[in-house]
Image (cartoon, rainbow, N blue to C red; front, side, top):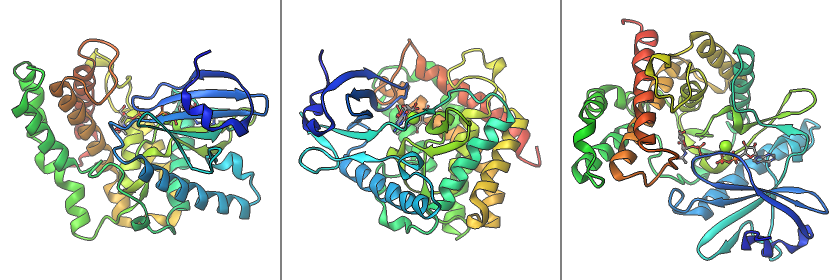
Length: 351
Ligand code: ADP
Ligand code: GN1
Ligand code: MG
């Protein structure tokens, strides 16, 4: 069988008996690997997205090391409480093949990742897990981590990138999306809300996960208890409210992120409240009063920003997000903007 070449740098894990694609993210390639000794997860870090993959590894190792130490103190099995990176035969934290960077982690046994939030209890548990993640890292200095994707959640800069994409019009699609471009550009004040709060000293830079989806939390297959927060590529300095925001954007919508029937897209307020309650509970005293007040803006900005990013990628010719059908990025953009419009109705007090 044709296994990724990177596995040749991990002969110490034993003979590979199976290596199959796994997971369904938009960015990295993930494989489940079995040897006679155990099970692993092999991932190719997308070098188009992560220009400096070694910085991604630095952040991942810093964060997992910190969580591992705390798990040991609490008497938990550290191999189930966080990701464990397996070194190459040469002792490196990742393998390089033809310009690609690969990493291998222990597969967390008897765990399940779920794709759909089934109800408020699920949402509460997931949000709490990301809150606990936030709290566990509150005593790790954010300036010790790289900004692996510079300005990842700098919404004003995402808006500028959209304007540049409109000007470039690389795929010749700008004329057909005038309405979406107008929707985005009409919300510059909203785009600036969190950067302003940061500049005013109200919103500290913390270590954030930045991909707070349900399937990035592993649950114990038997008890259903939360085990670990995974998918740590985007861990970097950021705003706490954005972690809650991305979770709401993705998990508290009444429809999938790429649903084309926009009449199905709305903010489920019960799920939204469960997300906020779970996150606040998980964060404990690691969240200031100002951060708590800005949580609804985290939800709105993440939704808005994601719509802007999908639109930018559509204009650029689908070079960033994996697409699976014609106009996929445009469908996603329209979906996110519909969700934002509903959030504006439900979350902004004076509306
Ligand atoms: P992606 O960027 O594709 O979302 P993830 O790191 O989230 O990549 O991995 C995809 C899926 O693989 C996860 O949702 C989870 O089901 C599974 N997975 C990843 N790492 C592990 C692990 N160490 N142990 C068990 N399952 C894992
Ligand atoms: C990407 O890898 P995945 O699919 O979980 C993206 C997120 C977006 C998300 C939209 C590094 O995440 O920022 O919110 O797609 N990740 C990166 O579905 O850009
Ligand atoms: Mg994932």
